[in-house]
Length: 150
View 1: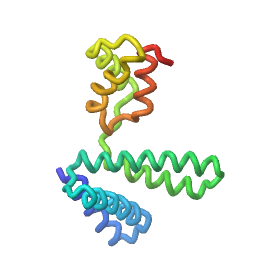
View 2 (view 1 turned 90 degrees about the vertical axis):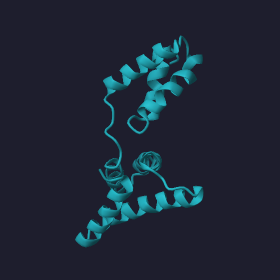
View 3 (view 1 turned 30 degrees about the vertical axis):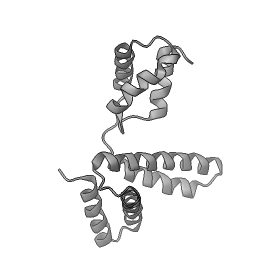
View 4 (view 1 turned 60 degrees about the vertical axis):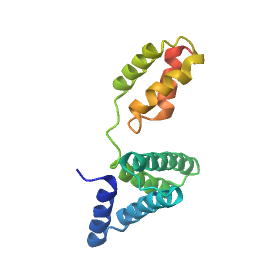
């Protein structure tokens, strides 16, 4: 199976040949973000490193969509949503709500957490297991609920 960077390169070539300007812009933006991180840190990123960048970009897109909706800029909302969908293609499939709740329950049991003070322990166990496959804010909220910190 091809790496994310290889898939991105192939996607860039295909969008150039087909004349799909929007997809070409999205692939170039992602490629530039990856190259910037590689140059800044002087490393060659693997798929997990690239997924962290994509995760950050997805969060930025979500925030932009919210801001543009509040400002009544539906034209910009549509553009950001299109880029959001494009970026999601490079992420692993998201966990279902039931799967996440089961993982939260398992992590609470594993750490023997009893109160909201133990939230850090639970999140420390949980985050590596769900990295890139679940929204951190949502995860945080469910851990709080489970520990009675709402």
